[in-house]
Image (cartoon, rainbow, N blue to C red):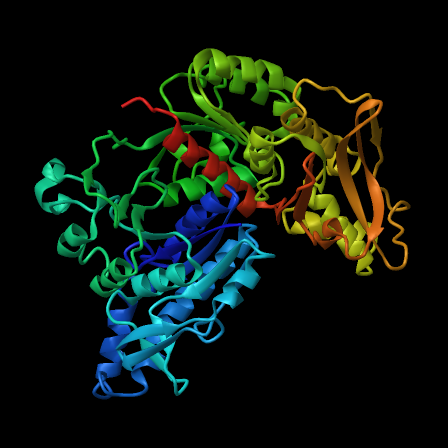
Length: 556
């Protein structure tokens, strides 16, 4: 199990509107099969505001009530981040400083951590992907809250990382530690790839709390300092070295198709990342219907002139095979990387798209097309890289899974479908979710990754109907997609299955997706996340866009 401590400070969490940027950073690691402990500071300026409030009533530095009041800033930011991560489909648990047994001794406002119940975090991460913890706050031996000094969330993160012997990354509003302030000297400031502790203690403050650096240095640790979404960082505690590799200093330019439910949410997310992402144009059926949209001037219905090589990434949020397939192929041939949430188009034209990507060197990504926020595609790609896959199975349609759960809870089939549509999990015409069409396209995409070049000798297909939703007592009913090797060759199925109540796939509730990957060496991998809804789907799309920017050389 690979675990990373990631700390988000007030310089990054400028307000509630910045929470989703932190979610994107967390999802970046989760989809790369890393468990995350997120340490969270109060929103920017909140700690100072609360200290002033305390000072308006009493002498804040000596009052036993001050840590209680100030700690509400971290508690608010951390709990809201946990909720935002849950909304985007990340399996999350919130833990307070009390719950993880974080103890400290010393002054009320500048204490030093002395102990932690590391087993609580380790146990949590056996079954979930993310634990969110408020920084800056601990308890003393008397059970009273104490604070860890200015910038104390850095101390929390470093202390947890040392206790669990895992890496730690501090997310800041600068992309490196520099020899001079870039705000004052501009490009003359030199970014460090790494800094030994002697140098770091001289120049890395106030980017990193001094007390946290001294503790890390004494423990022989390394601490990473990075910015959101970047593919590089400064390593504190390693041999000093200036970073010489060039970095992209302009925004990532996008062309987007679709501005409906998921498309509208994706465009909203892009505007949240306006410092990194620029939406150049958006293809829609009728631009006149969206005159009030903030990006209305960039909407067009001219598909013939849409494919041009002047953007970095094409984002396909269309439905059906055409025109998505033609646009995806056109952009790839023009050397533009693409990401698609349209499983029908990618499944129907996969060979053409892969050939176009190979020929131009562009990247073809489609994480959002299967599993929504559940990183099933990434897990399979990792598996085939180093292992041979024996079989995989999964609950791949969040809409049908939600409906099954609602029927199990006592609703009629029609009422369950209406509720799914109301919540945005189902389209007005949900035929593809019920007859196997949607799952069939997803199964094809996953099969091509897991078993490249192999075609099933048999595929069994079943549909979901009101009459078929009969749930045996003591069992759980799920629409399961499977692909597996037999003596006859590769076989596949997608149908309703009655599984034991404690089966991993039965644990997929509501719109959640789950997958099980069985390797020839006997290992079994498990993947989970929300598979329907605008939030998890846009999270996967955005993750692909930012990954392309990190891994694919973009034009200056």
